[in-house]
Image 1: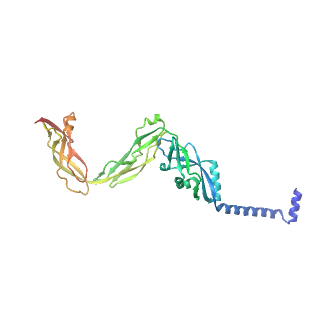
Image 2 (image 1 turned 120 degrees about the vertical axis):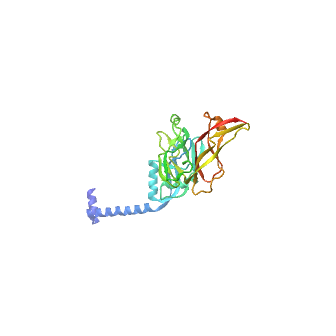
Length: 323
């Protein structure tokens, strides 16, 4: 065989070195041809094995099964080959918006082909142009799990510039979350805490995003929440007002003592108007239900821009008399 090979080379007048160069050139030409053709775009059917992730209340967030998604696409030859290799190796996990996941029955859900379009780049990767999906829907199973809805309790430390204060409570959106886990664990949880929210010397409204504190063996419907705190600049105004009683039966007379008390008003700046016709009231029903014979002072009358008020004293003694 070797003798025949040598005769062939001799007849063609090719040396061993020339042959090596020839084979190298042939290999190089084949590589260039292959790269060129793989770079061209073709119409082909691509297949991807998809595992769905979706926050569905009362169900696991990862589908139990995988589904093959077949579509007619336009992609480079390289992309088509890699898509086929990936489909054989492992499924692609795609996070779906709960709004596109439709309920069939029990733990069976499906996504319509029309809703799959926006997830094409996640399923097949970038550089793929979708023509159409072969199936009109793709099905996934999300087994049911124990779940419980609890409020979000914000953990925060906020301070304000002088003559500034909070206008209302710190607002959390959403103010509750759904927890998933074993029933014995969920029974011990009545709220979810946020990570600390810290702001100092505020003089204007703030808003932001904060993560929720993680809990072992528990999954949450959301991992973070938005917070909002309105801040208002205020002016203080101190007044001395008469104290009167309200809701007193017609045959009774309730006499508060003292008959006047101080009140400090905190009003939004700038003032919309001067406070007028304000009174401090004690409610007969508060007095009757009190064990100490005292009733708290309540501000009566409308005041534009009122943020808060404090009275001194906070409550007064009352004497009940028959008419």
